[in-house]
Length: 67
Image (cartoon, rainbow, N blue to C red; front, side, top):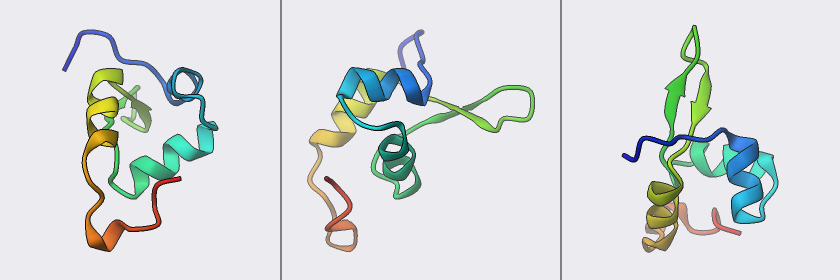
């Protein structure tokens, strides 16, 4: 993990996606995130880890999840 984590809105801009797409990819287990905030409810993303995750082949049970 790099020292710089960003929120979903920043990651969405970086990847050219909607913020809702970022949350959907995370919920489906396609991209990693870290819990942050006082109640650990916010998510933070490492851009390098997300890019690496998106390069991996999709498992058979996750087909149709990527846009």
